[in-house]
Structure formats: structure tokens, C-alpha cells
Image 1 (cartoon, rainbow, N blue to C red):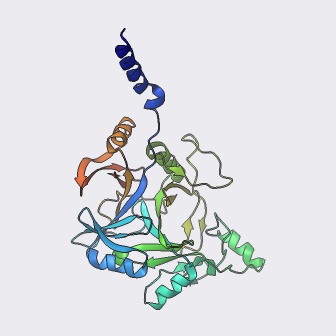
Image 2 (image 1 turned 120 degrees about the vertical axis):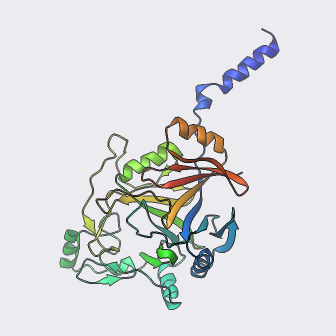
Length: 331
């Protein structure tokens, strides 16, 4: 064997080695959320007014707004109002982190923006900010209390904690926009979802999209063998009077955007997201062909093979809750 032939053979063997072939692709970054809207210009104006840190723009022909962390919200014009039922598909709502949550809510109310009531589970009582009722920040994952926990705290004389909590701004086309957390500058920071098996959904995203799991101290180590966790009790405060199932909960991160899952709140199967208010999410990848090869090999469902979008390419896959996910090539 000549030196040149040997070198070529060695290079081929290196490229074909299992170690290199199995090198994980870097996780995608959160690229966009696609909303269907009867009036995209009016919708974009609403978000820029509500969140002045965002800017009006366009992307691939879609009217859009841009968050300071380079996340886009795209508006797809539709003729009829989209279905905005927050319980019917995998997508529940999306959210922003303001720099001062209570001050932000007060400022928006003063400008005439409307917020959805959060029912307290105590008669017909409701609040706008979750921390203005029991438990403050205790109960189930610091988010809500069962009837028993509530009764116990009332008996002990526990008072609402006040301070930052969560609140739901009512947006155009029936959108729910959660205001929670603290961030400077304020920014788009999450999509919350429903799933029959939240922890199994998290594992799907970890396996197929190389996503990082959200850390939950004290949580067990889950696998596909033990991710089927029964639905817990209903808790309050809640957007519905009859409470909300908050356990189990799971989540992943794409860059600094969280995607969290809660239990399906109904006994009906979740419908595909396409055509609903929250139509799809987009994840940015550097090498689309490599991702297509990986996902095809893993038998992930493709809703749409490679297509041109603006000056780049994308594919659309289906997630475990029938959510549409676009992988967008970002060079």
C-alpha cells in the first residue's frame, strides 16, 4: 500500500468510525413561534405596545416581532378567526419575563390591557396575580394548592405572600400571554403545553432534539420505562374555576426559552396544532441535512419535507402531542 493510499484509507476509517458517527448534533435554538391571526399588523402592534423591548420586523414574508433575545413571533394571516381554545391542542400559552412583574401588570392595566381572572378555589374569589391568593409560592411545585393544602393553610392563618407571581394578559385572536418571572430587559421566555404524559414528552425532546431538561431539584431520574406518572389532584389558583392539574410537570430548554408540559386538563385527545391560534414553533439548526438524517433514522414523523422559507430551508416534524415543529436552517 502506498503512503497516499494508506492516508486515504486512514481518513476514510476515521470518518466512518462509530465515535464520530455518533457525535450528538448541537441542540437547536428557539427560533420562532407562529401565530395565526386575522389581522397580523394589528396583532404585531399589540405586542410592541405591551412589550416595548420588542421591535417590529418581518421574516420570510411574515409580519413579525423580535424579542431582545432574537426570538421571533411570526403572524400568519388567516381569513377566519383561529381556534383559540387553550385546552384543545398541545399549546396552552406563551409568556414573557418582565423586569418587575407587579409593576408591569399595573402599568398594562393602567393602559387598558385586560387580564384573565385567576380563580382562587375559595368561592367565586379571583385575583389577577397568583401570589395575591394562597399559597403565594408553596403547594405543588410552588404554583398551586390542593383543597386540603388550602384548608390547612387557612387553619394556620397563612396569608398570601404577595410579590411576584404569574398573571395572564389577554391578547389578540384569543391569545393568553403569561407575565411571570423577572428579567431585564423583558423578553419572550416560554411556551407552556399540555401532554398525556408530560415526562415522556420531555424524554422525547431530549432523545430526538437533544434538548436539555429543566432542572427540578429532588425529582427522580426518569426513563421511558418509568415516565408514565399518574395525574395528581387539582390545584388553585387556576384559569378555570374547577382548578388545574399541575402534577406531573416536565420541561426542556432551547437556548433561554423554556418549553414546559402539564397534564392534559381534559379527557379528550389533544388535536393537531396546525390551524389553531398557536400554530407551530420553530427551532434553529446549523445543519438541516444532518438533522433530517437523524430524525428519519429515529422514525420521527415528518409533516413536511424540506422546503424553502425566505432565504433558507426548513422541515416540519410532529412532536409527541401532535405539535408542529419547524426546524429552520440558520447559517
